[in-house]
Length: 236
Image (cartoon, rainbow, N blue to C red; front, side):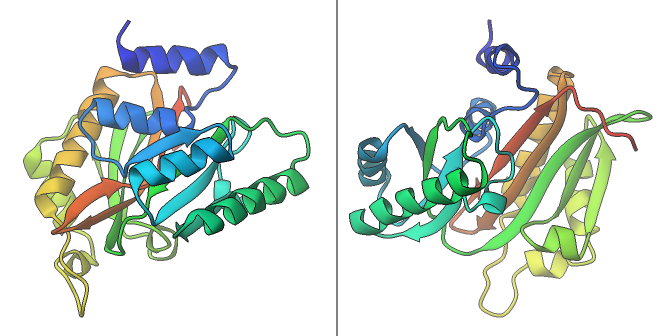
C-alpha cells in the first residue's frame, strides 16, 4: 500500500477523518512539498533530543487527535531557544491543554525548526459540489482572515494557472518584496501549487488541504503548518 494511502487508513482506523499534523506533513514531504524540519516527541526527554537534533530555536506544538486548532488551547510556543525554555514551554503547553480539556488524549509534542520571519502565504484545496477539487492561494497567517485576498482554480492546474493565481492577488506587490521584507520565491510557490493540485487529483478522498502559513523568501520556502481532512466536501 502506498505510504499516503496508508496514512489515510491509519487515520480512519483511529476514528479520525483528518490527519494529525506530523501525518499531514509526512504526506507533503512524500509529494515533494517542502516543510519545516520536525520530529514527534513522546516525552520531555525526546523533546530535548529532538531540539538538539534540529537546532535551536524551535517551536513546540501539541499533537492530539482531539485538537485541530492548537493555538486556541494554548498548545503552541514559538522561539524556544534553550533547554530551560524547552522544559518550561513543554510544561506550560501540557498545563494549558489539560486545564481546558482534562481528559484529552495527547499523542506527543511536535518539535519544529523556527523559520525566520518572511512572507506568509496559504495554499489550500477543498471539494466543491460543482467543480470538484478547487485549489486556493492567498496571503497567509492573519492576512487570509482579515484581507480575504485569495484566488481559486479548479484542479488540475498547470504552471500558467498557478502563476495567474499568484499575480492576480490584490496584494501581489507584497510578494514582490516591500520595505525590509525580501520577495517571496514565486517559482517555489508555483511548484507547491502544482504538487497540491496533483495530490488532490490522485487522491479524491482528500476533502480539504490547508497549508498555512507557508513562509517564503529567497532563502527558502517551507510549509510551517499543515492540515488534511478526509472526505469532507465543501457545501459551497
